[in-house]
Image 1: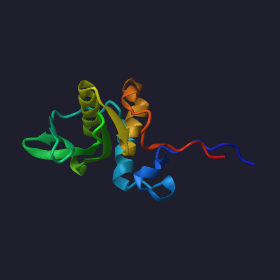
Image 2 (image 1 turned 120 degrees about the vertical axis):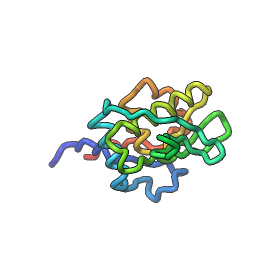
Image 3 (image 1 turned 120 degrees about the horizontal axis):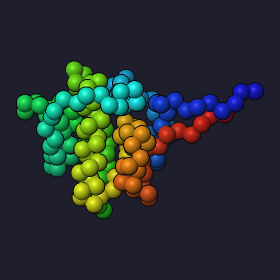
Image 4 (image 1 turned 30 degrees about the vertical axis):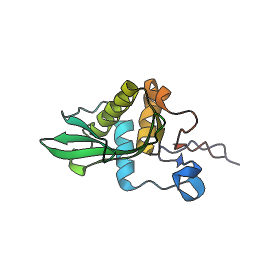
Length: 152
C-alpha cells in the first residue's frame, strides 16, 4: 500500500465550463517551460518591456521595440470580471522573467480597475499560488482552473 502522492507542478483540473473533457488536461511543452520558469526562477531578471492592453483583441501584451514578445489573452465576462485564458512568451524571451512580470502587471491592472479574475491558464494559477497577495483577485464563484488534489 502506498501513501498519498504529492501533486505534480503540472496537475490541474478545469471547471466544466472550461471545455476540457473530464476536467483534466495535459500541459503543452510550452506551458511546462513557463511553469518551470515561474517556480524555479521566480526572481529572474526581467528585461524592460512596454505593457499594453489591447481591449479590442482581448490581449495584454509585452512589446520591445514595437515587437510583441509575450501576451496574455482574456475575455471580458461583463460582470467586472476578466477570464484569463492563456499566456505565451516567444521562445527567445523565455527564462528572463517576462511571464512573471507580465502576469504581475496584468493582475495589478485588474486590481486597479476593481475587477476580479477567473483563471483558465495554469501558468497564471501557478503564479497566484506562489504570490498570495493576488489571491483576493480570484472570483470566488468562478475561480477557474485549480491544482489537482493529492492522489492516493
